[in-house]
Image (cartoon, rainbow, N blue to C red):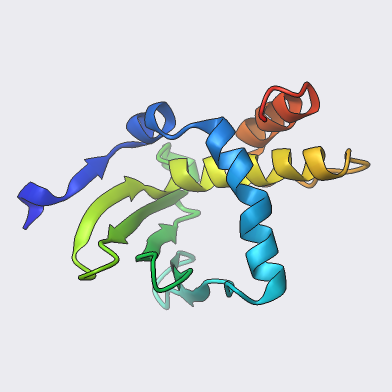
Length: 153
């Protein structure tokens, strides 16, 4: 089965997914959420009983025409002391018709792009008085600057 599944690293995701297209997609996504045409993803956050790590999963399907998507990962605060990132995740994308996995993408790169695009789309819709930034702050800040300069449309 893995011969047909596309695996994309964080570098590949950043190179292949277009920031401008991601920014342009956000108004429709928020409109669908606001109107009830799409629902927020189901979220599972499961703390470990062994240490301070947390397993997370977010799953969703926008419509009958779109495939499901699932992000699975972990938050491992203990990694901070030894160097590896504290958050790891992957996004699995199944085919809409069959549900068979067709791609697995680096979830941190996807989340960073989506967070940045959301921030930039918000700037385009309403110039910011305050923009809250999270773990993906550098990518979000770059996207916000691009949107403020009119480079994303």
